[in-house]
Length: 496
Ligand code: NAD
Image 1 (cartoon, rainbow, N blue to C red):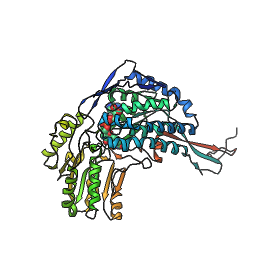
Image 2 (image 1 turned 120 degrees about the vertical axis):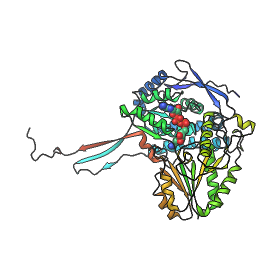
Image 3 (image 1 turned 30 degrees about the vertical axis):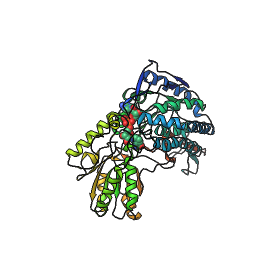
Image 4 (image 1 turned 90 degrees about the vertical axis):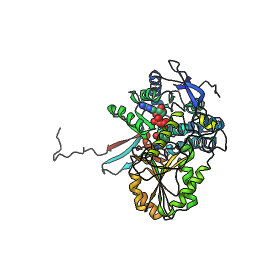
């Protein structure tokens, strides 16, 4: 069903259309039909957006932080009052089940705005005992204009997780949501105006990444980019930013591991595995897609994991009982199917799924059924590459000692979990994992208070928690010399 709504970009406080008036389709991945159209910007719109953000920067930076926080609180209230509409739009544009968009995404967003608004007011600098003759300190300063480029898998959550800390720390922004799922961020633009955030502080443009995203990255008026997305796109952005030595915050892909040891609570491990692997159709940067299961529990864990996964309700994401919707668009399905074919060629054994859906409704959309392979070689593509779909590999390990090497033998380093009753052993293993987040007997728990981010080709930036504030400010070091005598290393003072 075509959704007719006049979505507008936000530039300099005005909800407007692109200079060249372009439009682009947003496709509903459930049935592969056009769901709505949105503005398709060009570099000219980016230029206007950056200039508006530059003009607003001085006044915004000098606005009392308590006032900035109040605006974020107002924005949170407005988002909450539109939660039904926002969750339905989120589901329609990228296929995340309504149970997920309603109960996670649209609840997380106002909570994140409020958490960051309060947190920012508690941000401090340091005083340093460097010299008895001096008073030495650091003060936080905003970066200026920050470009926020976000992905489609949690469209509003990832956008707001960047927007809130950027604003509270006194920056102005140009935001670009993913081109396949920009609708809720465009709605946010309306709420930003309603919340009374001054003109030019937040600017929102939409359009293809290689054109509009790159125009933001290469614009000389932008002082930093905060990017979440695929590692290959992250590398491209890094290369574009290098000539200006512009700082880049990068939250990139993941190939996350779940280690299940012989002494794990089997019920909890099975339930945790099914949820973490297949929630949001496996389209979570932190989802486990490679399982290392110890030999003593393998023959019990694997059949139960397969059986429980086979019961996942896949279907219309607008149905509240649906547990797994489609992937975000048809190309994602094609990519997943290519990986499935590759795993079969590599000798991996299908334990569940592995074939396109036969149901006519599912066959029309970007659906991929939960798929589990038994794997015998950690070097197979299935255990090395981010598929971003409900497709996972399970491998038997002889001892807990084998796990760190297998987990670390991968270019990604986002997250991992260990399932065991022996917390000491779990902790010793975790200390050897080169990942940004590690859980024991849990996988995917993320709240605004906890930092999120990876290592290696998963990037290095931290989102959420108190650490996120550092991504959006400079720490300026100030040294005040208090004595009349300058500090020098000459034997004699210069007689003037
Ligand atoms: P993507 O990299 O294709 O797109 C992300 C954003 O970058 C979009 O707004 C896109 O339009 C833009 N973009 C694309 N090409 C660009 C270019 N050349 N220059 C500037 N911008 C460009 O990612 P996606 O498919 O939207 O999202 C899925 C990816 O995001 C996965 O790899 C996933 O692991 C990753 N992700 C990581 C985290 C994390 O915290 N580490 C969180 C969510 C998603």
